[in-house]
Amino acid sequence: MPTPAIHIKDLHKNYAELKAVKGISFDIKQGEFFALLGQNGAGKSTTINILTGLSNKTSGTVKIFNSDVSQNYQSARKRIGLVPQEFNMDKFEIVEKFLDFNAGYFGIAKEQRKIRITHVLKELGLENKRHSKILMLSGGMKRRLLIARALLHDPDILILDEPTAGVDVESRRSIWETMQRFNKAGKTILLTTHYIEEAEELADRVAIIHHGKIIKIDTKQNIMQQFGKDLVTLHFKSKISKVPSEIMGQKPTLGSDKSSLQFIFDHQKFKQKDLLQTITKSKAESFEISKAKLEDIFVELTKGESKK
Image (cartoon, rainbow, N blue to C red; front, side):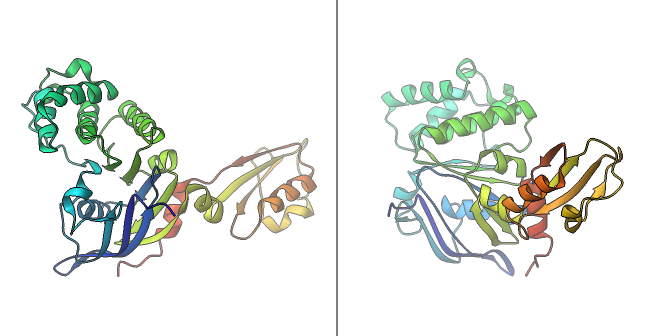
């Protein structure tokens, strides 16, 4: 069985009386796009800080390609490129000088730095900003510069902590496309986000973290299939005088046009084939299915969770 890119087992992190992370466990496969989804304060950034050595764990096991992040910090850290949530840059620095300094931090030889800097700037669409001050970059460009910095040493894992926070819609879409491109090229990506549509758009698997605990982890498709509820609309040729007996059990409501019926199809109670049989038996002229959103499932899973 291949070594996981990231292995976390029974991880705890306490800050005095505050328990920020409460025994979470998960593996991320090599080449996977994995999203850690949760609200602000759920424990996402704390987990990232432990993975990258910015914070020490209270207990548990954390490994990067079999290198323990506590015992073998340097070898583990070299495999990771971190894109932090905060803009931790000197805004008066020149883009090229900023990247050159950080390349030196990772031990990249002077003669190789210019090559790597040129490469990452081109990858992130920042070639024409090479000699600009960071101060002059837009919010979206600053985010891309942070990604460029994370890629300087060509890491196997790219960790992005809320990478699109505070950027406009166009910049967010551009960053999404960039992340997808790097993942297709073979990089393992761990994304933390509270934007549910971001996890839904990008991730192969999703772990939902709430008050320091993982409350659900599975493929995006399985979560939506297991917990999702679809809105089904049946359209008939004429106005409905009587609800077809075949769909009475679904408790349908009559549409405003009097010739359509709507009901909620719950995947936990019925199978997909049951839905298709119901639609066929109703003899509707046409139908529409509005698929469940990850946002609806997130709300459903977290609304009953205790803070303890």
